[in-house]
Length: 574
Image 1 (cartoon, rainbow, N blue to C red):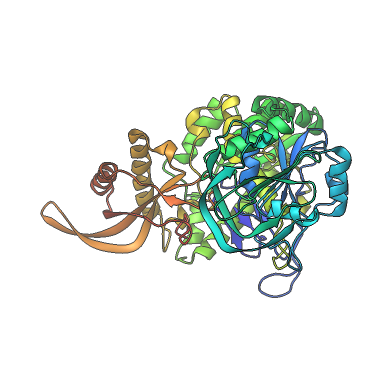
Image 2: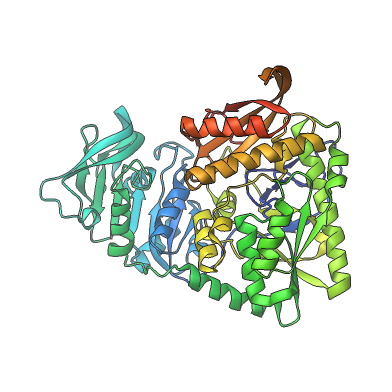
């Protein structure tokens, strides 16, 4: 969940880890939303990874929506990479062992005033170390702008798939193994009109002569198309040619090694007697992090699960079995159902629901922390479930007009707790967390669970949250998830759930008339949860779901299916 602060708008974003995975970005921590009073300080984390010893591919982000996808593609090759703002200094970048540099795309025009550019010191660093460079879209235009080429608007803009043709006799190492013509995804209005000094043309399209350029002597390549997106079928081949064949990056980014490294590091950091506390939910992030911490320090890691009364059916019991009994995590469960539901009584506004659940969780977590310290001694460390996309959010280039966000904090926990952060998943994407979970021997069902929102079912019950409505939704949701597993669709769906609507409809059951609730099933396909398409669930599966829910769940007599995509809709309804 995403906290702006304990007293400000506590907002939850999509993640499966309710309490544990707090992704927090403070836009203004100097004043409160309702008046100017100063807020307390909150535990904070840095936004840079600081891996100065591990060789890496550095991706300089110019604000492209695809920048994080470039990073994921490089990681898929088992090559370590990090993403930086395009405005990164030579001093910062120079701390790292650079295998290659990739310049991302971006929404600006290189020739416009105020457009972002790589610092001269960075270019000097690249030259001094002879680091290979690949510019993608805006990144290629940046190469042209810096080294004497000409970039200007094209007569026609080019968006979508395009056929790229290699020039006759082209033997560029970037296109090794590719045919003479291939399909790539274009997204540009500007184009290169003259190649920069020392570069030569490698490939073009019917709309643009220079869609690929290279300078073998300086080890620089530029691409107008986007090889990182799925719409470019051979794009991965191009990226691999650059990263592995040209830059000679080592493919040694392996999750088993990562786990062993973390365990040794955390043992040294915590020491032989230190204690670590962390809130968990049973989602993949918190499960993997908790198992890692347990492997490192055993029962000196104290996990807390808070049952807020809005979890899935039997969720608390299942999490206790899975994490405590099966994985050996030192886990305690706080039954706070009555406390949460009592505070939610009569509340219909989704923002108020979030504030109540978030604020109450903080109170309970602090209460449990005091109990643990009284029993086991002082806890100096807090386990936090930051993922690499959270880090990217803090360091990506947003443009001069964007609000610059401060670094993440830890879900509104006050700095007076004086806890030091341990973030075992901080360098990982979601798919890498799953891979790490499998490497740790965590069962497949746990590793592949769908995300679950911070406020739980409270924001899937539109209107007032009552124990009765929670029970209705729990039963319906359980049936839908069960049918997705049975039909083999669960793993193909990014997220699936049921929403209970504040609407009733007339129905007929047997010889009687009913007037009961309407529910809606939501299933989406997505890889990054920033965009999503509705999942094309077969009619027969929908029919089985509808029949079971209406017949088995007292209180629902109509089931709908949500066919909206994100954008313009969101994945969750509230």
